[in-house]
Image (cartoon, rainbow, N blue to C red; front, side, top):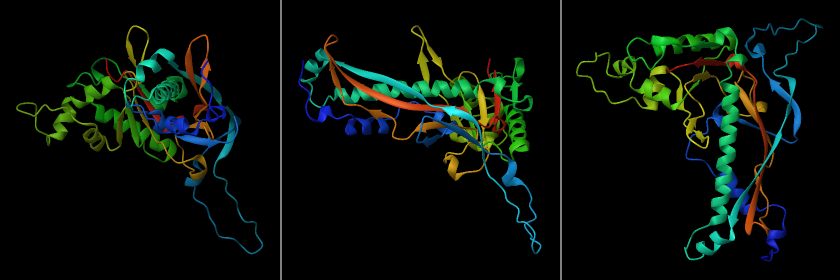
Amino acid sequence: MPQMTPSQARAVDPILTEVALGYRSDQSPVADMLFPRVPVGQRGGKIIEFNAESYRLYDTRQAPGADIHSVQFGYATRDFALVDRKLNGKVPIQMLEEAAAVPGLDLAQHAIQGVADLMAREREQLAAQLALNAAAYAAENKITLTGTDQWSNPTASDPFAIVANAREAVRKKTGRRPNRMIIGPEVRTALAKHDKVLTRLRGGRGADGRDQTPATLEQLSALFELQVIEGDMQYHTGTAFVDIWGKFALLAYTETRSAQQMGTPSFGYTYQLTGRPVVLEPYWHDSQESWLYPMRDAFQPYLVGPDSGYLITGAVA
């Protein structure tokens, strides 16, 4: 068994932890936008939610000797509990021997980045499961499109009308219009080539002789008056790739600041244990003839403001 150096005897590897903290998948992490991280110092506590208190009208005048009114922003509701998440990156001794002949090949960093990517994919799936659950939304905050209303029908459907209604529904309940719209890859393709989208981009000209170049995300954002984001992350079932954000469109008002800095009805948060993720020192596994690089994390996303969202199911056929 290879001997462990003094640095490997430490509990945490600061260099590899920096690799884990700095690594980002090449696919967009929508979870960070819908469920921004809130650092917490323990694995359990109370979820902070916000109501319409900051939008009320108050008479702040005080008569002599009268009590001064008080107002509270935010309140604790249900409990949160973080889930410990653990995964080891494995580097077999055979790969190390081969890598010795290839200058600049850092298998330890590659292993940590691979584990970080898998954990990010898991978090993305958890976020999608929360955000795309129609049962979490009131009747006024969701719609299911069928037939010619689906945006994959480029002539009969009207995505601008649907999005306008969605924005107004959220505004009426929260005082804020959605600032982001998350769409799956197939939804992006349909919108980018939709007749009504291209007509607006070309100054209202009809289909005859019109430039058919698909609209970009930046152009879609300008047309719909909010940030349009493609949730392009996928996972593999063993036989095929699956789009995590499917055929949905989700409008939401989200804040990327921490709960302590805000007071607005944000869509959701990810409660993240302070100091995570962390990479422990690698250790040698004799029976596998491999070095193992353990990564540890502790987090859990929560949908705390469903009234700040609007779910469109079946956006495309």
